[in-house]
Every structure is written in structure tokens, then in C-alpha cells.
Image 1 (cartoon, one colour):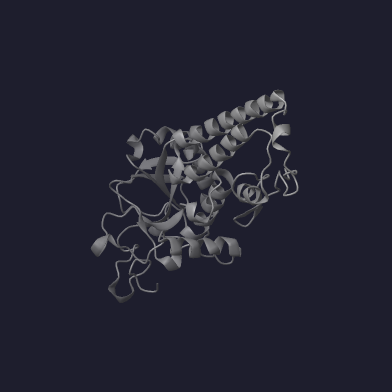
Image 2: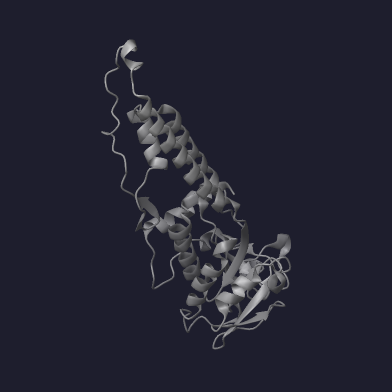
Length: 304
């Protein structure tokens, strides 16, 4: 839930400042700090970084010369009351909205179809644009799932070089794990389904089969949301592990992620291009940021 704490406390701090400061001014330093975190215009997609128009410029709320002490006692009480009402309204509305989002529990899922390069990019962009996540908050990571066995230390690798436990021979599919608010499961499932038809002809094999994983599988309390999103588009089948390819069919296997957990792909397979499609620099920079934060870790597979 760390993703909601920063905006919540920033909103609360700003609202309390307005509430108790009345019509006094913001200093340039405090304004600059607040504008970077809270006071932003609509987000504009330029890769994955945010550009916005500040609603308050540094030339607004400039502090006037202080009045003599005796003059300040004559400020109108009506003005102060208006500021307090406005501050209370701002605090109530923004804090309620933030807490409402925070109250929506989150759940881990994974999706797979074709290679994980394209699917990861599409899910990352949707996270950024619709959930407001940036760099270290992005949760869509490439990995493997759906096989009955794994290698030593639960490790899986892209290939079997130097005797590594490759995901293909062990029956796994290439997938992307993502953490979502439960209210967004259906929406993201529909985005995933759009990617099934984008699978390239050359991507054939059991490692490219269409899969969805969620805790509890078809018995999950959130499965009806997946079912609703898939209705009339694909046929959902219970995953038992090591299934064949689904190319040319409308089948999507649904796994219980407790039995068939997601395991991370190599660092070299995170946030990569999907030739002949090449992604912008902002997308690639997420890799560097998450590596520094310790979100992406080496798996010990060859080629990292």
C-alpha cells in the first residue's frame, strides 16, 4: 500500500496548511516543494515521465511587507472564515478520495501470451497512465509460470545454457506479473485480451500459450471479474500445469498462483525492446531505477 501514502500525506499537509494559515502567503520555497508533489495539471504522456502545468506560479501568494503589529489585529474575520471553510473542504474532499482508493485492496495477477516483452510494455504503460504509477511504483515484471516443476532454489531461466533450468523444458509460460487494485482487474484483463491477437506467427510453442494466474484460480473471489472481461472473447480453462500451446484457439488457461507461482525472469529480460518494435528511453530508465531500489534482482541465470 506504499503507493498511496505519499500523495495522501502531501494532500493532508497542504490542506492543513491552507486551513490554519488563513489568507497568509506561501513562501517561494514551500510553494516550489508543494508544486512538485501535489499541485500539478493534467498528466501528459511523454514516455513514462510526467509533465504538468502548475496551477500556482511562484509569483502568486508573494508575501507583502508585514503590517505593524497593531494593524494585523484589524484583519476581517469574514476572510479568515472563508479560508477555513475552503481549507476544510479541500482536506475533506481530497483525503476522502485518497482513502477511498487506498481502501480498495490490491491483488497479484499474472498474464501471458506470446513473449513477455510486448506484454510487459503494454501493462507498464497502462499502470502509468491509469494508476498514476511511476518508476519505482511500477509492478509489471516479466517472469515464468504454469509449469509443474522448477529448478534448484525455485529458479527458472530463459534457456538451458550451462545446464540452467530453462522454462521451456520445465513446462512454463512467459508471463508478466502485476499488482492491481481489485476494482481494476476487469479493465486490465481486457487490455491483456487485446494483446492475444497481437501475438506474432513466429511465436509458437507452449512457452507462448495464453495464461492468467491469480490466487485461488477459478475459485478466487475475484475470478468473476476475469470471467466478465473474457465473456464472448475467449474460453477459460482450468490450468493444471505444462499445458500445450494455445495458438489458433480461443483458450486461456487460468492458474491458481499458489500452486503455479510467478518466478522472476532474468534482469536482462526486464523492460526490453520487442524487435522490430523499440521503446523509448523513459521506459528503459525504469529498469535502472528498479535495479537501484533492489526491486529487480539477479537470478543467477546465464547471460545476466
